[in-house]
Length: 141
Image (cartoon, rainbow, N blue to C red; front, side, top):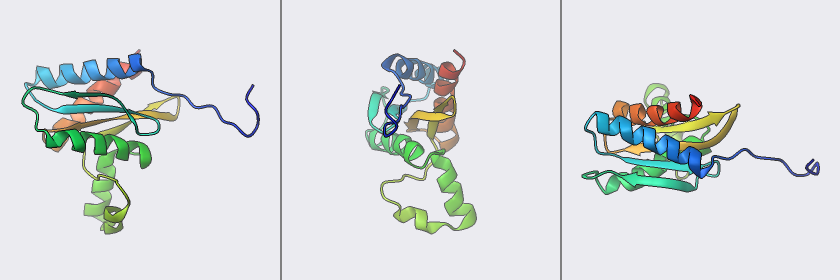
């Protein structure tokens, strides 16, 4: 039992991150898309990164930013984009290193955010599609 001043965290294992990455890569390959896929832990630090052949170098930073945003904001990175566009919440643009673009999804296991997936290099909906395919592989286990 933990002391009362400490808390236990659930974290994403390397094996879990690999399962997500493999499924996300398979989804991108199935559609002949070239993207960067980044998986981060519950503290928004990278666990795995894959840059597919022909993916833009700039997508490396964007995928990481989307994944970090999903962890820090505790929601899909695209939700912040919608709040800016639909609700005029332009103050979100000044909120640190948040990247309010679609393609970053939190990984939620038993109600806890254990990490996130960020995908960049495609159209916004495609980035999300690849990220969702990756997460689905883990949650289907």
